[in-house]
Every structure is written in C-alpha cells, then in structure tokens.
Image (cartoon, rainbow, N blue to C red; front, side, top):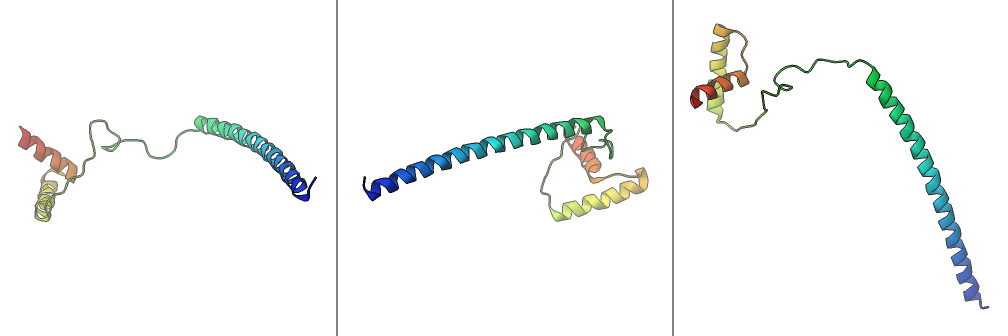
Length: 110
C-alpha cells in the first residue's frame, strides 16, 4: 500500500469521526433545545395566570368602528382646519382632528 493510499484511508476515517461527532453534537443540541422549549412553555402558561397590567384597550385605536387612514392635504387647508377646531373647542369642548374630519366628511357625503 502506498503512502498516498494510507493518507486517503486516514482522511476517510477522520471524516467518519467528524460525521459521528457532528451527529452526536446535533443530538445533544436537540435535547437541549427541547428542554429549553419545555421550560419556555411552562413560563408562558404561568404568565397567562397573572392579571393583565396596563391601560385597558379603549378609544378609537382599539375600536372596530374606526379605521386609521393617512392622507396628504395642503398646508393651508390643515391650518384652516386647526383654526376651526380651536373655534369649535370654545363652543363644544374637547374635539380632536379626527372628530372634526369625521363631521366634515359626513356633512359632505350627505
């Protein structure tokens, strides 16, 4: 057997060892990940039992009656609308831009 054949055989055996150790490492990793996932599931179920904290979901953002939209309007029209809102606040109390826009669109679409 030549030196080249011996080296080739050694390379093949080294690859087998590498493959075996890679397989063993993968199996160890799967076990570790599985254990981690089980502990995460337990933690999530513990959180479900805890009361929710924070503000309740109220207002336009959480209401199904409203939808957020984006539109471009001219600067001068926006300034006029803001002035009109300030005037309406003196008469009716607190009003925001979306309330004002809702009223204007309703009046226009009638």
